Image (cartoon, rainbow, N blue to C red; front, side, top):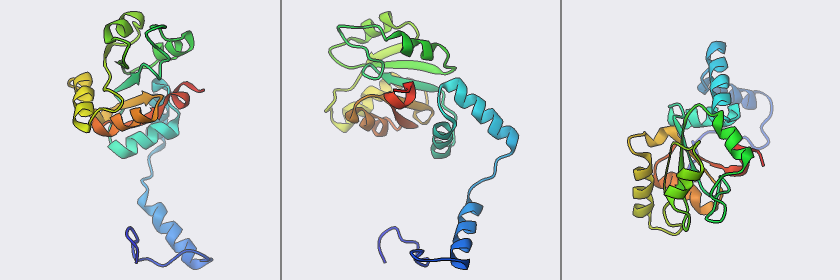
Length: 182
């Protein structure tokens, strides 16, 4: 038996009754939400600028609603040469009904990012891309302040930024192209 195996029968080549039983057992584990709750969650996903599937997966992982987004300057297409986010990005962010914070990746300063992007509630320095785990965690926690990490989704544009999600114990990570739609 391999690690992670539950000891149940192998389903390779299984047909008929065995497959039906395992499928029914799996479906019985998933909660069935009342239609009113689903409608509320679909509406909340739209308020956050997320598709329902993404929002539902964050809710399922954390058990909490999304209260804020943490955007890296890379995700917002902001740099020291262009400190303001493109109109497409700011247009979407103005409609989001949640807290919006920024992480300014060096050499961009957090002050320049906040001044040029008033849609963000606040901006903080991002952890160094190759920072040690403790340093990344401290920078993310400082940016969050009193917000619960499991209620904040990180939107980034670099593979190394995804690690900040785990370091800060955040609700999840979304690539910028998925959040902003290409």
